[in-house]
Image (cartoon, rainbow, N blue to C red; front, side, top):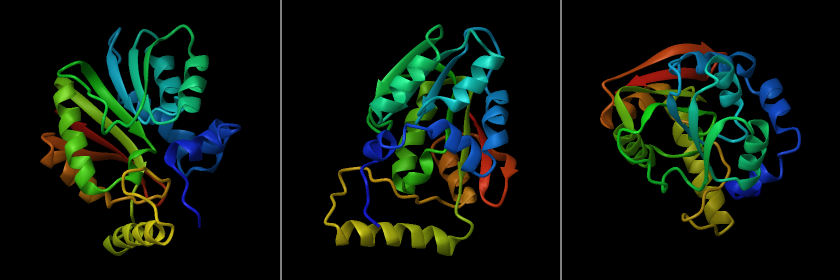
Length: 218
């Protein structure tokens, strides 16, 4: 397979993207709405959405908390434009870029959320990201992560080995993000969250064989 840059991959698939995600992704008919129920319901709550895409989780959340304020970060300008068009009356701060590079600030957000985005990245990158995220949350804040995870340690290793082989074969740089799934074990993901400073990380619900909603508290 030929690897595509992350932003190019999603830009090329914007047509019908929402329908595809809801129809073809395991558990998606339920997990967007469920994820939204774990976010704060107080008026004007501030949330940070990592890899917000077209805002499927925000669509569910604004239905629960219409006064919420959301900051969304995504690599794809096309995705962010689609998100902005959906919610012209909502308070949105949309940032095009990598959430590994964008500064989050300190104690700004009541909660953070990420759905079907973080399974593209290795553990060492996630430790620093989650530390930055922990700092950005207010005391008592939380992070809701819904994503799919590797079903075994062997598969987790295989994903990363396959990606490394493809990048070598195609002479691709490690300085770019390419669309290739490298999910961790859910237990490894929760361990990383705890290493980053979250005092508690637990599975709230499982969707099918390998998708989970994890809640981590500051």
